[in-house]
Each structure stands twice: as C-alpha cells, then as structure tokens.
Length: 119
Image (cartoon, rainbow, N blue to C red):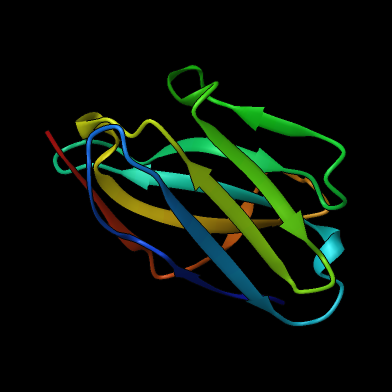
C-alpha cells in the first residue's frame, strides 16, 4: 500500500511555470506507475501524464506535450510534474495516483492540489 501527498499548487499567470510534487510513503515505490490526473470545474477527471515504476516509460496527453514533464526520484519516493507555458485551460485540481506494477488500475490517490492560471 502507498499513501500519496501532492504539493506545489498555486496561482500563476498565463505563460508561467509551476512544479508539483507527489510524495509517497510506503516501501517499494518503484513497483508503482504514477499518474497525474486533473479535474477542472464542471469537467470529468482526465489523465494528464504517467510514468512507469523506474521511469522507462511515460505517457503525455496531447494537450500538454512540449509543456509538461513528468519525472521521478525513487530514492526520495517522489514524482514531479514540471508545468511550463501554463494556460488558463490548465486550471484544475491536480491529483497523483498510483497503480501497482502498471496494472492500469489506479487504486491509490492523493488529496489533490489546486492549480489556477490567470489570463
């Protein structure tokens, strides 16, 4: 089992940058694929990016390619989401989630962190 805590959200102007962190507790962090999801007001939650347990495989949704980067430091049990060139449409609550050994079932979720991009 793993517990996840997100941090780093906030208010930023369009074109700015933020870095979110997802800190995990528990052993064998490398056994978990980690994804970042987001949910904007009135919209369904969507997956934004994911990274496999040892970082060998990543997924990016088209809307963030070239602007967002996901990385992980298994020694620190932390996954990072670097967000550059932010747009107002990136405004959402961002959640990190964990899937054991890449099963695709994200059973563990953080509480979310708010990202607001002003125009």
